[in-house]
Amino acid sequence: MQWGDEGKGRVVDSLAGEYDIVARFGGGDNAGHTLVVGDRKLALRIVPSGVLQPRTELFIGGGTVVSLEGVVAEFDKLAEIGVDLSRIRISDRAHVVLPFHPALDRANEAERGARALGTTGRGIGPAYTDKTVRSGITFGDLLRGAYEERLRARMRGLAGEGMPDLDAVLASIAHYLPRIAGHIVDGVGYIHGALENGRRVLIEGAQGTLLDVGYGTYPFVTSSHTIAGGACIGLGIGPTAIGAVVGVAKAYCTRVGAGPFPSELEDATGVRLRARGAEFGTVTGRPRRCGWFDAVAARYASRLNGLTSAVVTKLDVLSGFERLAIVTGYRVDGASVGFESAADPRLELELEWFEGWPDDLTGCRRIAGLPAPAARYVTALEASLGVPVQSVSVGPERSALATR
Image 1 (cartoon, rainbow, N blue to C red):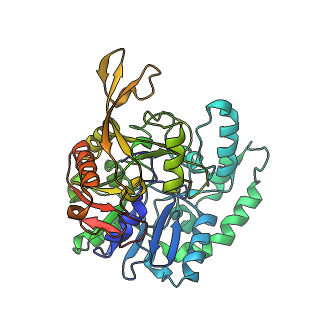
Image 2 (tube, rainbow, N blue to C red; image 1 turned 135 degrees about the horizontal axis):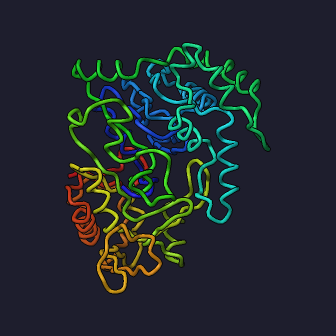
């Protein structure tokens, strides 16, 4: 519901035991979804976050872009901890992140200079660009062997530091394809077959609403549609198939990389939030920018996604703060404005202050059992989102959830 890093992976993990399939609908291995179950901590980049639920199938949908090297490396990591890789399927419609895409990504960022977007440099944007201009290669193309001529045309003229040549790219495909060929399926047939047989599907997004390529803080956005509607496009299903939409919002806000961030705290409080929440990127290791919860952005995100409920994460991080603020309004030249003005340099914020709490929340398992100031804060977040908060995370471990 924000700029990513809200804790979607741990929420998906906690829900996945009730579902037959967990399906990723967009993004690539620029995601960093962290799961903590007991003493095991696992960071995932492309495989859906249901891996630690032993019976759940895992589907990488057609709206994703997938690095051959990256997915094989993740498969190897999962095999080492005993995950049954036969549960993982990749849609034939998913596009391949090829070895020259990261080099293009880095070159594009260098060319932007001071206006760099802060991408992960993993080639996600260039892969989506190739998809849009119809020069991309899908996993189905790899299986059919229908890619060398298109690849040759695409790479003609590509040169520069770190840029592989055609032979190196062909060798990479030949090396990695045998490892994943058996996982590639007719993605549309797979997901519709599951739905028609009454199987329950949990659809997992990546990044965050405010990074959506169409509705985020453009141009400081990711390269795909991250909002709930993108799930239909990314899996090839109609909107009537969606039964519920759960939004995940952190109890404060963070952002990685450049772009508008109205509630950012560039002071000791922001530093304290970063330290308390261990706010460093899972993929890049970069420190995240930190700020108060933004109710204006939350209302905007809630509208875009058509939420039916929400989960609030990292409430425990706020324990020990003497007081907390929520951004309740934006103003420009004295007039009330909406999230569309987030980048306006004249923007002024309206804040509502709340009493903090000293209590350790990690043992709470019911929202009703939270300390009174924490419960009032959650109620305010719920009002901002406009839907019931079904649970609140009070620690990183799977079981550290306070529910209704």
